[in-house]
Length: 133
Image 1 (tube, one colour):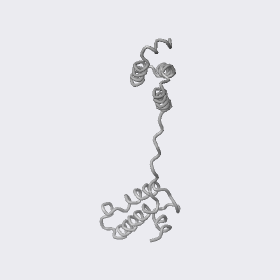
Image 2 (cartoon, helix red, strand yellow):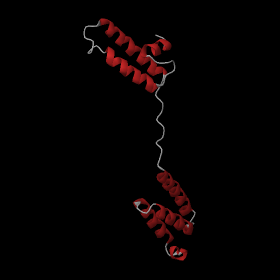
Image 3 (cartoon, helix red, strand yellow):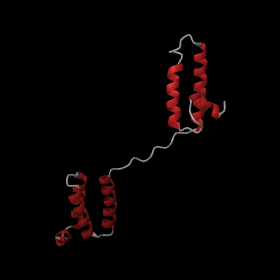
Image 4 (cartoon, rainbow, N blue to C red):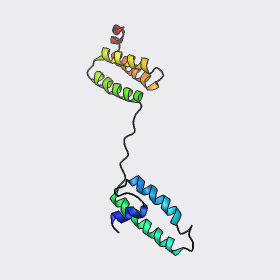
């Protein structure tokens, strides 16, 4: 069976997406399934053809890879600042790291992770942290 015929059996336009193929198959399979049509030999044959077409189309139209989940803006900000913070600590730019973590702590005051980062930055900066204030 060729692809255009498979799409026709499922009632889909040529080149339909993986999700559309799955949905159309499920809808038609419910109507033609042998358990629903016990004594209808024609429905049984159509069900077999439908299943064959479905399996063939699944090979042709592979599923779309899932898109990366979108992070909320605050999580993106937090991740971006965390990367900046790591770079500042590696370069020993401690006053700047303190200023950055303080700004983030004001923006997200209830975030426990940020409080931990504050502790790390203050610990690393030691007596220099007092000079910033």
